[in-house]
Length: 165
Image (cartoon, rainbow, N blue to C red; front, side, top):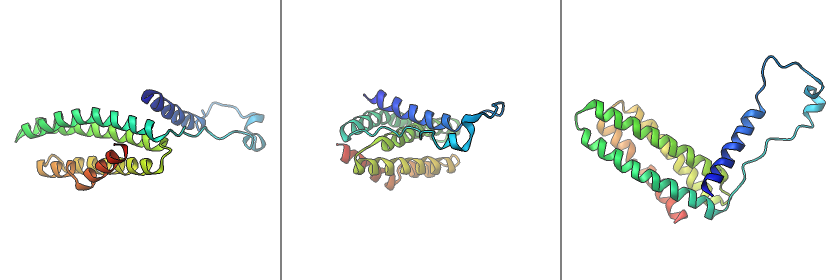
């Protein structure tokens, strides 16, 4: 079901993007006239899903992310003064949190329940801020750790997890 939800969301986004694309080599025809444009149907909306389905996708994503975060956190701690090892771990963290943020945004967009939508949206926003702050830390160990342990990120995660409990 999770794969289906993500596939539907991705397909919907692809349709929206594709509907706005054209190539310069296309020649105008009667279908391109203003009258024809008025008859074109809007792109399909994202299919909204119930709380149970959204939360199942959220919980699965969090389970997967938790294992990755623990592994990367261990690497960050072990890196010590090894700037290359630290940079590699930060890079992996950024990739994983960015992927999680994207999944959270898709889940929030498809959530029919307003409380679930709001909580997951807030978590996605805080994840984006944490990744940006960790990136801006420029390799500073303490700043990176502070960014990843942001109280607002942790609060947003707890709120979403509590709602999807």
